[in-house]
Length: 144
Image (cartoon, rainbow, N blue to C red; front, side):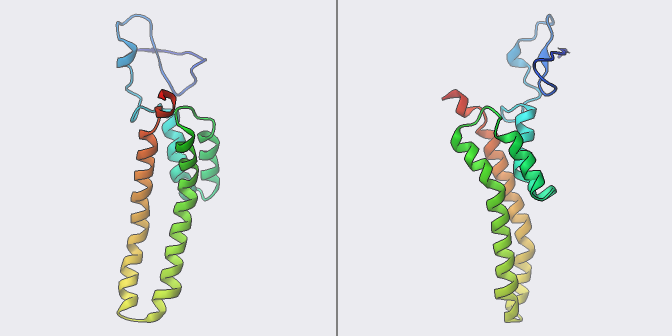
C-alpha cells in the first residue's frame, strides 16, 4: 500500500495514494479492533498511563480521550473511570491485606501474602480487558 502525505489527516492516519487500484476499505492495516492509531493511543494512555506515570499519565490519556470521536457517552464515562476505580481497588485490597490480615500471624498471613502477590497481576488483566472492551466499543457510538 502506498500512501501520500495529507496535512489535513494528521500524522496518525495514512491517506491512500491515487492510483494503485487499492480500494479504501482494504487500507485498514493500521487499525486495531476498528480504531485508528490515535484512538488506540488514547485508550492505552487512559487505561495504563496512570500506572506508568502516576496521575499525569492518566491526565494525558484523559486529554486525548475526551475529544476523541467514535465512542458513545456511556463508553466515554466508563473509560474516564477505569483508572481511578482500578487504583482505588488496588489501594483498598493492599490496605486490607496489610492492616487486617497480616497481623493475624501464620498461617493466615502466609496465605494472605501469597494472594497479595497475585493482586497486581489480577488488576493488570482486568485493565487489559477494560482496554480491549473500550477498543471494541470504538465507532459504535458513531454508528447509532
